[in-house]
Image 1 (cartoon, rainbow, N blue to C red):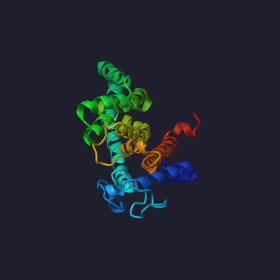
Image 2: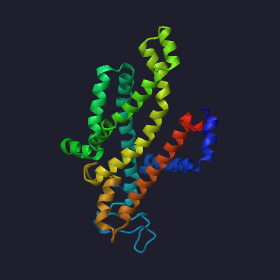
Image 3: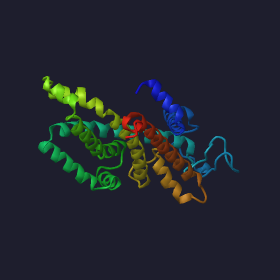
Image 4: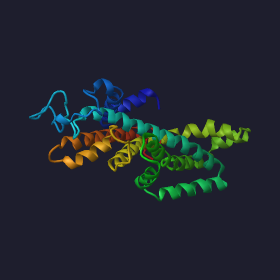
Length: 286
């Protein structure tokens, strides 16, 4: 779709604009976290522990969103936690796509035993919930940023493989592919010139929604103590800490919970817009 048409559709979609604003704000906050943070996100100050947000009695302007149980600034940890969540979301989704897209293209185009093998492996993996699989693997590998990205990335390959395989099975029988094959085009040329460009749209849409899924999965694993090891800031770990202080320090759980809610909502709103934009069947009402 031309850029002018995309911009016109975006202007008519208030939800997509809201989602983009949320994402731009989150990305800006993550990139500028060292500049915007009012303090060190891992520095303890036990004398200032459980200080409320600055607009409440007893609050301090030096800690706009208050402090946690160790006196660490909540806003600083929230901003640096955005870097962790967005980085894990982006890298894990890229890893899953890098693994899944070539497998989907190969198995969909070639068929035969490779198709059966990879699809059966994918079905076995899908039999295990992502969180359960993540808990088992991280309990063995240990909690770290690299292991978290590996577990969330590898567990998502089957989504891309199945979607790309289905599109490839359909595209390879289309007339323009048959015509190119009749003219002597090699398989590699057919895949990269005719099939791959036509499967980018569903890949982009699935990747967008997958970022939200990975952010929630990372927060859930961190909530269970299997995310980044402390004292690294993480929204899920902040929720885990705040759940024990809902009556005396409600801000500890409220602000990271709101951050997860808004970012995931923003990603989903943008994903809906991209799905409508990139799927021509929706425009024709098919």
